[in-house]
Amino acid sequence: MSVYDQEVEPYPHMVETLENLKSAGHSLYLYTGGETVIQQRKIDQMKLSAYFDNRIYIRQHKNIEALEGILANGPFDRRATWMIGNSLRTDIMPAVKAGIHSIYIKQPNEWQYNIVELQPNPETSMYTITALEEVPKVIHENIQQQQQKRTLG
Image 1 (cartoon, rainbow, N blue to C red):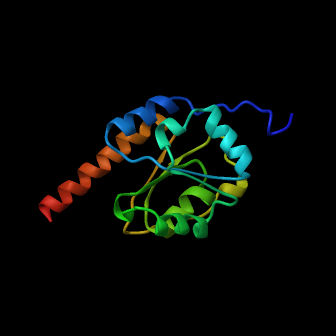
Image 2: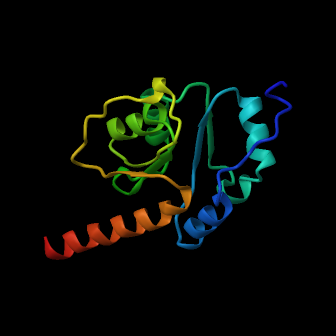
């Protein structure tokens, strides 16, 4: 079956997670990689524009250069920006290098290609979770910790 014909299967709890983040006041941005036509079809099928509006970035390749271009040309405060993704290589490693926080959604059958060694960035937080619905809690707890540090600091 052609990639143009395949139905997209969203992550479990995707809608609830996006609703939770949106209702908590977070500005949501979507960054995906691949052929624009294929990625846009997936976005349309899952009705993701309802959460991301015109804040959707499709790049041929997801890497540090692409992410830096987005961060440099957008309204991003790196200290408050998060990358949430399921690839250490194309999501988390670029986020760590760019100095933004990251949440890795660990997959049970990770491709060997995606397994990379990460050099920690002391300026950012990196978390590993196993389910998308854990994202809002991780972000909320991190924000609380940062506020406590500033208060005590």
